[in-house]
Length: 286
Image (tube, rainbow, N blue to C red; front, side, top):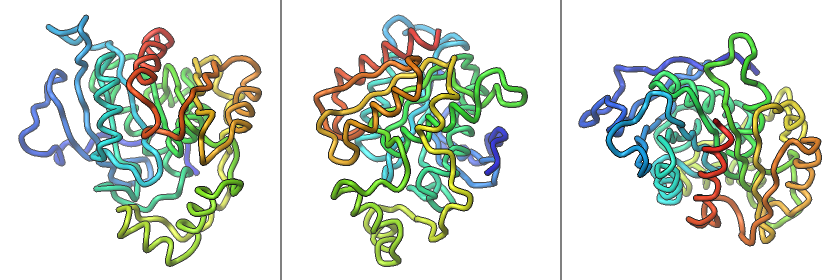
């Protein structure tokens, strides 16, 4: 899989009725390094300390949603609204989701989608970027942070300055819970992929990973010195608590670990938790 930075904004695809000022919303399609179009939205900061003007270097959050989500889903918009109190927010639909092109690879090539979104945030003038991912998106932000480490030659524009992974798996092919067994049926069976396409608006590739991508737990040791926060619910029905503990252990003490009284991903993260993540990101990204 290519780990070079993702491509530029396709400016001709900016949708009507959106101004291009950083103080107004913007919607466009981005092009990834492998040529997939990614539906993306920019929301300016609504931070109370930044009402009159938004400095070019102000922090931008890049939000990576979970599997079967998309940029227009209410639970994704709620996350965007929460983080907009702390900085600008770039949200997007992963490949195969919503209006984006391509097919979902369930966490493999999605790293290229995130890289395109991070680069767009920097093209809009933001010098500090925090990536925040949920579930599948949580695994993607970890792998992205390892593959696009800040300071690596040719990758700086696509790298992040702080990373938050919420409800992420530590390893691939996990089937230890009923929801994950259902998800594997959705991904691996032709009838499951039909349900994904027409029931969840998610188009899933039939191809198996070749090669198998770097797993989240394998990626974590390569993220330092970028600040890393791992958030997980003690009632998560998809991934039990050995997953976040494995990720934290793999960091060698570099990551912060928050075990929260919650379930799984965006739906379980309440406004108070999102606010604490926003505070942490502002401090960690500098």
